[in-house]
Image 1 (cartoon, rainbow, N blue to C red):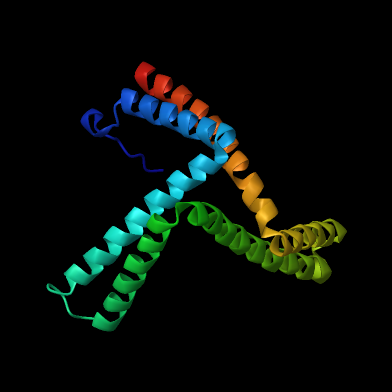
Image 2: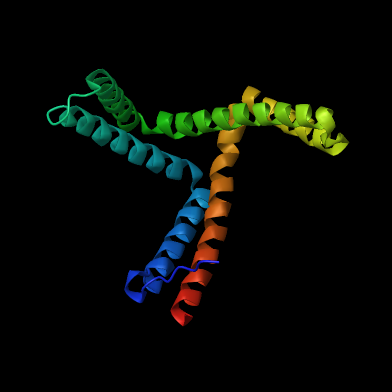
Amino acid sequence: MATTVVPAQSRIPWWIVLLLGIAYIIAGLFLVFQPLASLVVIALFTGATWFVSGVLDLISLFRDRTRWVWTILSGVIGIWAGLVLLGQPLVGGILLPAVYIIILALSGVVLGILRIVQGVQGGGLGVIIWGAVTTLLAGWLLLHPLAGVVVLPFVFGIFAIIGGILTIIAAFQIRQA
């Protein structure tokens, strides 16, 4: 059995982990208590990121022209999507989570069907039931994505708060080590 020794100077300082945990808790509280404002901020940040990424893609063509069609396409789409989100942050605050919910729902339908098939092929009745429940819930979410958009900030917020608490605990464990 091999063990890896991490030199002390390469470890992350405990106080950085502590700050990260505090940031998670603050972000989680914003998501829980100010969900619309939080989604607008996320849309603005995403729009700025996509815009800058698109500009950098186009600038990269001066250095490297391989796959230039794809680089131009990704650059133009990044700039366009970024400008759309920056220009309409309220729409982006609803559209981004809706797309995320649709992707999750499609994944849930596929996974649910695969579980049902697995159950029929010998996985048992429990796997079939789990697959059916997953497929039904994901299908409902696919038909009602805005319901998921309403709940998504709260779910992410609660996970961020829990993750922040666990990260703060880890920071103090790092400090004691």
